[in-house]
Length: 230
Image (cartoon, rainbow, N blue to C red; front, side, top):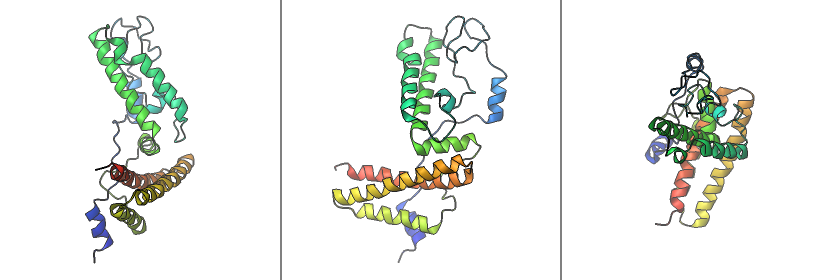
């Protein structure tokens, strides 16, 4: 009989990897803010709207002091108005998308590419509860190391293992849908709980919940693959 730890390793059950850009620490951001570059085109010291020089209207490089919440005009909070977020995303892409800079200088073309990539990353990160929570933790100087179980209790790991086994054994759409329903219910529960943890500034609790969410995100991806016809 396999022990639960050995079976857990056999299944390859690891938290899902959530990609993200490297963040500036608060100190680094303040240092960067104290050395704002002048406009590369006309030398004007003003930053304007953060994208264009207020004097010559040349597109400027991305502001390294802006975090995703500031860029997307959102409060630095786990609770995000996703409709407002989408509108901001569309607004920014109409402003800095590379297609609108095809007749501009190569410097501005390069900057527009960087801005567009940054806006895409910010939008995707803040849209999903898991990546939003992990990003918010990073802004508070807390990260969850990849490839670790963050001291998960055996009961939780057993639950994950059993759900994975049930999914692997599922031979019908109904069986897969049952697993999917379980995963979605757990995601909602974790999302509600991590929202409360952030509201209470309990970052260690938020870290614990987000780690569990990463495991269930991994299962969710397996459910999607299971639903793809062979």
